Image (cartoon, rainbow, N blue to C red; front, side, top):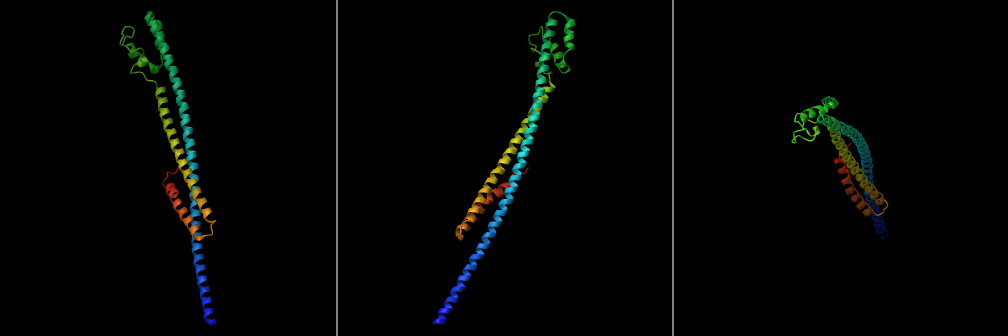
Length: 227
């Protein structure tokens, strides 16, 4: 009887060792998975932060270029307005001299028109504005009138608006990477919490949830445009 009891104790001891070895193997596999997940989180977080910084820099660069073009456009627009005022005041004096029959003074004012303004003035003058009520009020309303500085200012404003829009898009890209970094931080926190549990089942469940949550930011970061 003593021999039978000894065999039972030995069998129970072997079963206990087998169970402990199985638990240790599962624990080691879980730790390997956790290590892989933590490595993926670290790498992805670093890449996401790097891309966010690049997009921030790109945004600042685009905004700076947009501001420079806007300042240049405003300067050209101001200069163009001064030219229009000069031409308009000269036309008024020309009209006065012509109405008074002072041809010499009228010719003098005519010679003082800016070169770019002359074609429009000549076309307007040919319509006999002093006697023709259908003539436009001034040369600046003629089809021949063009102001290069005004056109260039408008072009620069369009370019500035396009650069500003691209800068806004760059800021949105940066925000998207930052959001993914926050999600990665959440997964990292979940992994840290899971390792505090001694119960194997709870730890496995939290690791599975962490892996599932990790999939979205990883895929999203992979699909996002790179700076």
